Image (cartoon, rainbow, N blue to C red; front, side, top):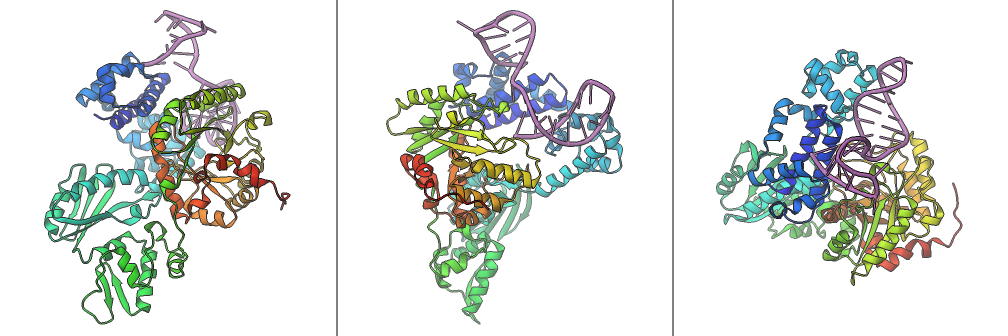
Length: 581
DNA sequence: GCCGTTTTCGGCCCGACTGTTTTCAGTCG
């Protein structure tokens, strides 16, 4: 069993223990062991073999043995026993916001509920509200939570969909029968969540390709198995469609199945205006039987007198017009990013040491890296007290000596307190190279108060970057109530860059806000918010958001050199007096 | 179940919020 699966199993054990009302600290021990292993560099099998597993913080006698059993045999008796005691469906119910292990256990033990429809029924007919510790309001909240889960239930994170699609594409590419292959759909357009995976193949032998496709590993169910289209449900619950076309049709099919639907409609309208009919098989001059020949997607656009439009922009938000006018932006690329900004270390809630994070940043080719641990109010994340901030400065100087190419910057992720103040006095803030300001508490404030709070923080002269501006967790938590326009305007005015948090569950700022923000004079920072070395590799997800938001390298702060990055606010913030509305 | 310059037992991150209670439990970050 590999590392991700071991981590998942440990997390599931923690949840199962909570459901069984075991010692809560025991559950937490499994949770923290899972986190440690997730962040531990190196091959898990080797760690087990060498015994170095036990050097990892949080792994002792008990869990160590269980991890070894998992790695070596792929099974774990302890885990299987736990699962036998609790209906597995109950775990799924915990996704409902406000419905935690205690409530789930109560509903299950007294009413026998282990399934979402039953839970909804009990919430509606009043049975739930009668349980001790429940009430009318709780039942109502659970109904709303169920609604939320349902409305997001059939969608998947971009990162997960990509992880599911890549091995399929790799496997099919090995077939001789496959001439060209590419992922299309919302995945190719880099939407933040994905409903299903679309793969387009050109081949002279569709039957061979389709037969191989439906026989691939990791498929739970074959929904359809035809010559031009097959459809399967993968083990993770994601649907995957495969389309086979001839090599001549491929560019048209790829464009068609990349979408978006609205983009396609607009493209067909353009084609029509030029006397052409456009569909997934080709571009047909009026009355003609056969399509124009286009060797690739570029040629399809050229036939409509357009430059190639990057898939990320194909949302019918003016990209065709911009293309026609020669005004498409030169979209930012991952390689443009020079600074790996916003990561956590073992000082707060990260699982890797500063030096390890720096080493990985250097290996990935970054010129500088900005550490950003949590501030003192974030007690749950072991936020840094003022003296720890000062000590971290010394630590950075020490570690810096070990690096020639990489420059380390000292930042902090300061909580925005309830009234909009930052989490340290000026004497501490002024020692830092930059300050990310973020909201981690009091999410439920009324819109007006939240907006005021946010703007007050933005106007703090030490604020550099507004962290995960909407606070959303994709498929889990909605953004907080906020007058985003007012916030963007304030950020533009105060020269506070907007973070594009690249964590796959955040992707926050939303791409839809980027263009608006840019028009208001805002700049951006694409940050991994990494809590371990592997998290640094999330940066490209953030680049995807920036590209969808029409951003270029000039818009992004951490495309600057380290010196320019540090000086950006100080130098350019000076001139005019701040005008207040 | 883990951990240890308060070390082999007794702590374990902790405070806010919400809704349920009539002083607190559950959830969340």
